[in-house]
Amino acid sequence: MSKYEASNSDLTKNQTLVMGALSNANGPLSAYTILDELREHGFRAPLQVYRALDKLVEFGLVHRLESLNAFVACQHTSCGGDRKENVLFAICEKCGSVQELANDRLLDVVKSLAIDIEFSLSESVIELRGLCASCKTS
Amino acid sequence: MSKYEASNSDLTKNQTLVMGALSNANGPLSAYTILDELREHGFRAPLQVYRALDKLVEFGLVHRLESLNAFVACQHTSCGGDRKENVLFAICEKCGSVQELANDRLLDVVKSLAIDIEFSLSESVIELRGLCASCKTS
DNA sequence: GGTGTGATGTTATTATATTACATTATTGCG
DNA sequence: CGCAATAATGTAATATAATAACATCACACC
Image (cartoon, chains in turn blue, cyan, brown, red):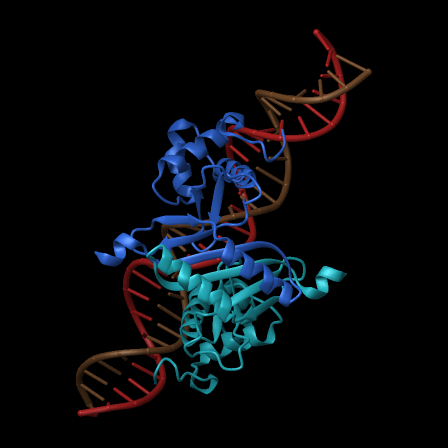
């Protein structure tokens, strides 16, 4: 199995459980929140969660939010391809919702900036903090 | 003292010590690394470091790197002004060096993107990962 | 001199993540 | 099939990062 061909049906038992927890959630979850939710399914230790998360992130099915130390299910209809690293997030500081975006213009600017400073770019962490559309008005 | 007027001479004893540790370092330091370096100066507990860091970040003299859980001295000749949040970082995954940048074009794109999705932007976390110019060639 | 505010000290605790090692499951191949 | 290699899992312990709670100290200001 190529690392780009992983689909939900290929996932192992633990990966499926973690993916399910993240898919059911309406926002990002911490590893320990996932652990607590999965105790009823036999999870006992953080490592069971972290190992599953590592693989899910590798498959592109889950993203790690660096500024939250949390994880969120990919919102693209088909992630796991070459756009895996080309995403950014708008994180609402009021309701905690996360909107995942892929913006070519922004990523082009990032890439050209990297070239300008002779930086060999492997990944961009872009996380916008603020208020989402609905929290902004309420 | 306005929060924009803080200079090194205004800093308290602990803030000065933490600022010194970060200024001497050639790259980012974790709060606990700072703690260890400052034990000889009487530091005993993490909170002494975190409280100083909170203020230094507020003053714009130090930036927090979200993807590293670490802190770095501001590299601008004069930070602490209105550009405080308008910076991004290129983090070398080989040597650990961090280059701080202020790029208007990138930040304009971020702002217009936020407008597009009706997101009220308060802060942008932009951290590029890859290889710096010198590590790239060696 | 008393009062308010900010800084500091200290202990304990919570939150996040990894190391180390043993075991089990699955895959691929002769 | 039987075996070896690889991947996944289980478990305990530990490392790392950050905060809570509470007491005390320093100092400006009236």
